Amino acid sequence: MTEDELCRIWVPRVLADPSAFGLDGCLLCGGPMKVVGLFFPNPDVAKRLGQPKGKQRVVFYALCAACNDLPDKVEKVELFLLANAGVQ
Ligand SMILES: [Zn+2]
Image 1 (cartoon, rainbow, N blue to C red):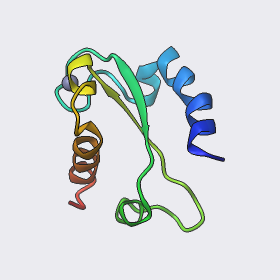
Image 2: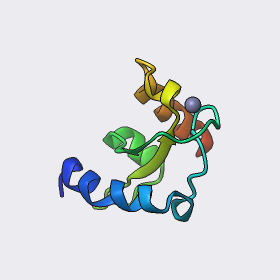
Image 3: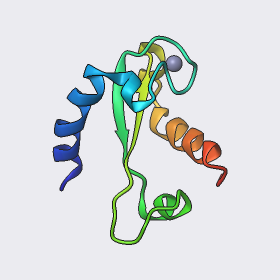
């Protein structure tokens, strides 16, 4: 499945019930959620996050409007997720 297909399937489900996916605020600052994103780690990052061979690891996250406007939000999200997984 492509990233676009995964987003089309999952983003509406996550938006319908964010708390079911463990989302209760902006990943970066804890502010009110505005957008939900899917993070697809590159192969190196996925390995560090413990991705099983042959499976795709996808991480859901939410951002507030301000953090969503950051030009380097993708890098910030990636760093946060890696730090959270203890594999910085
Ligand atoms: Zn934020």
